[in-house]
Image (cartoon, rainbow, N blue to C red; front, side):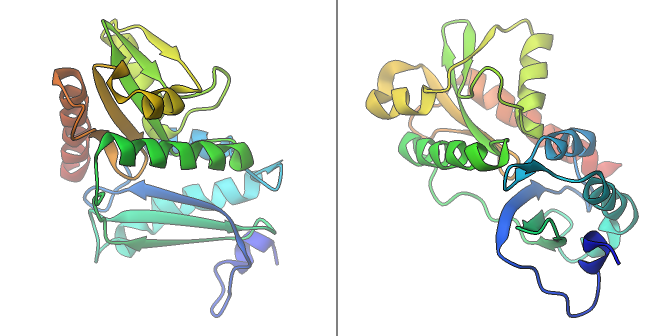
Length: 220
């Protein structure tokens, strides 16, 4: 019996979690499923990339059983947990919005996610900022993007908006919150979240675009 198959057995219990992914659902479906799978393929546990077997199991679960599994929380959150031995389990729970969306709160989330990326390879949440006619993405130049991060990057390119990466963006905003015109968080769980005290037309437009994506997915 494979380690991935073990995760499906009755009574199976994971060991110590080494990776936790939280992905927003809409209408019992997973928006950006292909992007999530690509980003998952870039993630690692204890320095080793996730196995092809585990990735195939996740993909199969999403395609075959997610609709039934998400019946109670169709607009909830899909959670994937992988332990230190590479064994996995998935579950669906209710979605809860952020308790605070101040610049300070979003910066702290981005900084925690940055630390996570040092272990797993991908930051599930990144800070973004508006600087003139360009966007600043709080990520290292070669760091693989999360699903929602890659969506933002592609959308900016489609709109002709320049994007530059700056791995120190969260620290810069923490040191000088007024350094950028607008600040927002891009998250696989929460989507695009404008800072309550540093919002503007650009951030709100991206947030509305993400909500439209959820609406379209739910209507499929």
